[in-house]
Image (cartoon, rainbow, N blue to C red; front, side, top):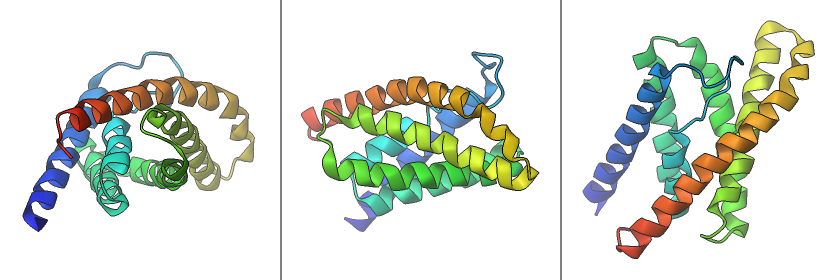
Length: 166
């Protein structure tokens, strides 16, 4: 059973990392720095609802670390880690109160907190609190991206549950 769990988590991490790397090659959808869909978060949100929290956290941490290494941008490790962990913490709380038909809500709230975490790191690193004026843009982009990724995670959860895959 442990080998099956390890294999499943490695597969989900590889899928998330692949999605992250492909998305990194796509030109920005809007000309606003830092705004992207965050498609790899589909896997993390799905794993959090489908499996144990520790499994989802490990998938997130390994994906963030390897994504920074493979993209050659180690500075993004701090931003991604802060955003990812804040998002994860909030999503754990959401998972306790949401049904499987409301996973999309966790996607939206998680994405918003992911952006807040990244903005906080930017403020600390640059010692420039005035960049907080960027928050409304990040909130709107987080809501839209989180809605999309949350709906994808909910769809994936429903399909795999239907086929008895977890």
